[in-house]
Length: 94
Image 1 (cartoon, rainbow, N blue to C red):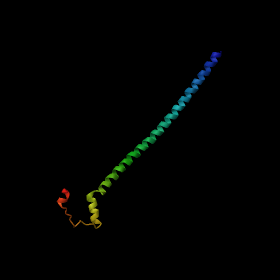
Image 2: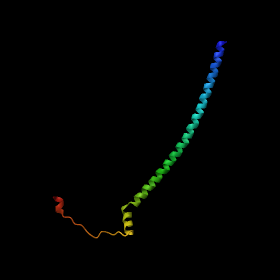
Image 3: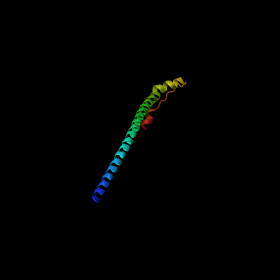
Image 4: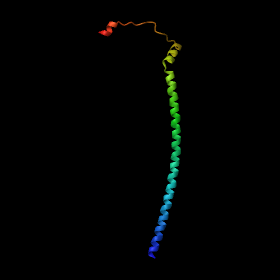
């Protein structure tokens, strides 16, 4: 009878441990799916920011191009230099 009692207690302990393991598995699965959703949102945000960054780089390249800067300089009253500078070829050889 003593062995029967111990066996019943072990069976109950085993059932309780299995129930705890199932609950822990459900909890971790829920956390993993929530983390997956957050990761997906972050990935889409990174993609959107990368696209915006690329657009801004293109706009910067256009705005800082030499032809655009020349056009802006003429619009703001700058003119071509009228003076020419001559250097003596002998100076470079010394």
